Length: 169
Image (tube, rainbow, N blue to C red; front, side, top):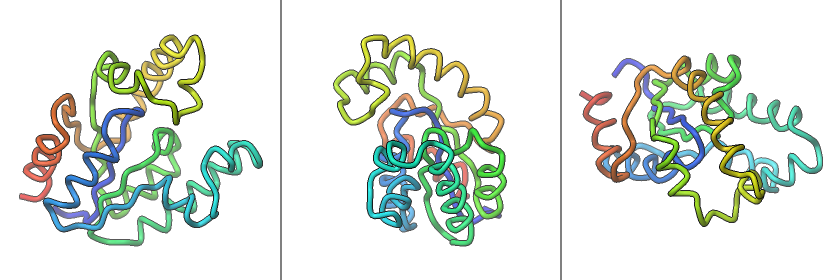
């Protein structure tokens, strides 16, 4: 495989967490969610970090976490939706990881997130428009950052098995 970590990226609702856990199970690799890693380090939620300190502070924490996780080996790392929009994070995570884009059509993401109450972005009357704009602006950056693009518009297990087949030959 060359690089020992597998870094999952993609838009919210693409399956990074669910596919990551499935992939960890079928490969016996450790699963780490970057956002949860930051929350554990800071003993608070990402929402609170944003509210109390702002996005720039969070992005610095995120970069430090990306650098720390790049020192690990044999891990499945689920990046945050915005993590790989920043070159410094891409460079850090690519040191020891193969970046995999979980590519899912916007309509599927809208369907998956229709009842989601946890994401602040989705608690707005214009959420569909905002999601569409974000999706269209982020997708090219995800593609640029990724080493492999996987169609994740299928079951999490089928997606995980495809990643395993492509990367762990």
